[in-house]
Image (cartoon, rainbow, N blue to C red):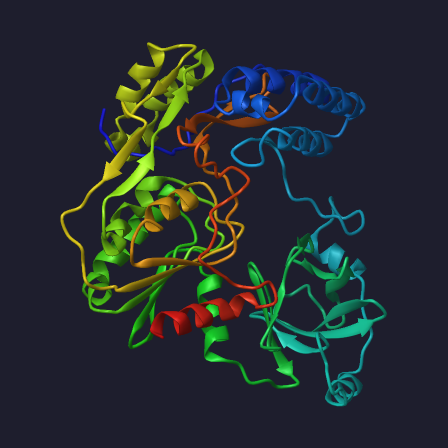
Length: 483
């Protein structure tokens, strides 16, 4: 077995099930048994709760589940039951979940028919413009634009209404309500209507430089009143909107690298960027790595980054894997799929052989409790590396931090991470009726008793206060690195 490899992968071929109607209680009973018999973290969860607590928890949720007839509510309730045991790397999903229209009874209507029935907000562009120009502090009110729309936003009581002023979309007419903003518990929530009139909710959004309303996948730029935007806000929007790895020079002394994901599909992009910009990285004093919202994926994605922060041997705890008949069968099927090729370097066949000969046992694939990563070369540059983290960094994102934080060059900036790295190697099985999919963890870190990260996370060296808006984080990190 190769040493020094952390394996995190997703087995992609489902086990077929008999198509039949299932009650929520039947699904819960199946999932509960599968969880207790197969999840590598179940015993650890038991050690943190008394038998009385577990019994009370199970009985409380079983009473709820017996009354549920709606699938989305069933999924939500079972996931709440699972949260008692562990927040990350453990979930059930409705395989057939789809986005439905929920503004009126529009499900069977055409886009044209919906357009004719859609709510309108009457306005006069001249009166609205004069009103906006009269405001000393417009806040969210004003005229905003996106790629296809010009939108007016006006405050009405405790909410804001956004209505179409101009649209390049055929069915969206002047006056149609395009968005709503409502403050709940002192936090604004944005509801935005997509081109097909379906609704998307954004529970968190930012007002950046007073010039942008920004949330993931949507950006509105203020047109009126006009506003001066900063260089950092433009860069933040450009990179945060990108869902792939990017490298950009932000000053003579600093390069910025965004790593939004370690999903295997991102590996080729990350590796090619690092190769393309290699000479530039090695002659630049500072490197900022923005890891915010990187929920993980597979550890080989960050293999080529290690050389740039390496200063001394890196020690990591190994993992053991729980070998059960269900998990071994999943491995066997995985070996037969076309997706196997991407993981050949991880010795999947050898892992399968270890597991199938160890049913009912925990298998240490590394042969030791810890292992060490060593490299021959320590590069003088980058000299200072700042890694930006937040609460959404998880799984392989946190595994990357375990390596990087041992470097003399690296400091972490931001907020504590998710704390979802002690259990991993996710695998799934489908319910007997084929309606639900249950994900669980096959492995557990051997360091969990000595240095647990589960639900604790990895702490930053420099905390960025909650009052500092996200778009200023890169600016703050850069100022510290160049001092």
